[in-house]
Image 1 (cartoon, one colour):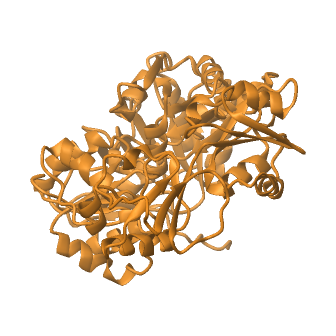
Image 2 (cartoon, rainbow, N blue to C red):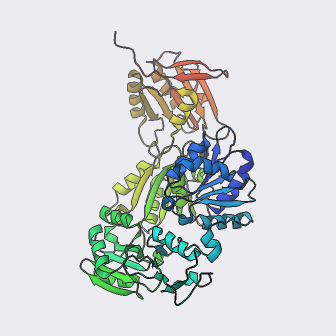
Length: 560
């Protein structure tokens, strides 16, 4: 399975089963109907639209509902069988698992995994698999079918009474009920060689070939394979010099071939690098490349090492539904998770194989350097921030650590910054749209910048009539500074200016209050409060539930 599945439920009665399934697939996300079910990862408003979107994104779907609802929802999209993701219907109580679509993408494998996790039998209906005890069109990991359409015709012939003989090493077929005969006209051929298409032959390629290259050249790689007479689907991975980890051409070539990209030290050329990685393989040297053919499918994880990855993520304000899907996916793939302990715990739950590195909130640079040290070893590392990592959080610290480092291994790490919903945006959304026009985001903490700079910027921003968003407004070590800041703002703002106070927005016990600038007192605020001070145009009016809507119009009065 290449993508994390989506577990789609319609009501609260399915949630317990969905959570059991999620334990089997920890990277999966649970999608629940808006207004009907809580405690899910994501909400949706239209079941059919959601299923169709997931299907078109090639996302495996596990729908906890009647099979007919799923089929009717996807009917308009069912055209090309070879490219569909796995789709399964599971009974609300977990008593039945029915694979519906995706026989060529492993749906029956998923069905058996789910059935085992739920303690039931999977309702497999695939005729070839029921007759022969295997799905010829979906060979096991480490093998690739050459031509799906030819495969369909081949299986149809066997179901119609043709016998078959096997050429090559196919251990998974030894215990099947295939109609075997040495005199058969139909042949299953298992091998790495490039062969012309044959109506009577089913080609299955073991992924037993590794190509070592000096640089990223897709045309050159394909030319080398052709010269060596090797079928492209037999390639398990590309191996390159670790100095070329950041070579975009290499990554593009690996992506085009649909294979992993691995790296190793290359002191004496690609051939010696490849021989060291696969000592038992048969080696062929070509111009600019070397090809190794192993006696069995290659364990890619044992060849060289991968490029390390470091992702700096934003969890959002705290609520699971406000965490963006890309961040959830990154957390699922992580081997190491680093961050302030409070935020790391917010990011869970974690698998037993994931290593947590929790530190004090004042150790940002040490944390950033540690993250690069881990990623440079080829590990998948996540640095956690609350809100957005680029807003007074870890993204700047990580980039600073990289900027000041002369270690080439750090600079070869695959670094990505993944955004999150910031505290200011989450608070603004709860209140309405106080940030609907130009605004300024400031931290009132003077730990890393002088108070004189803060006061100057406050004065200029207030004078410019920007909406003000205050992070770190007050603490035990600086209890007086918010009062000073408000004095500065009041030089330029009317006392009736709306102020939004959002405390722990997106977390249990959140509170939201709207006061005027004249009413605002420092004791109303603590370190966990986001303070939004309106501009001269910011408005407020009562909502139907007795609360207040606050917004800043998109227009601005013309100069008189």
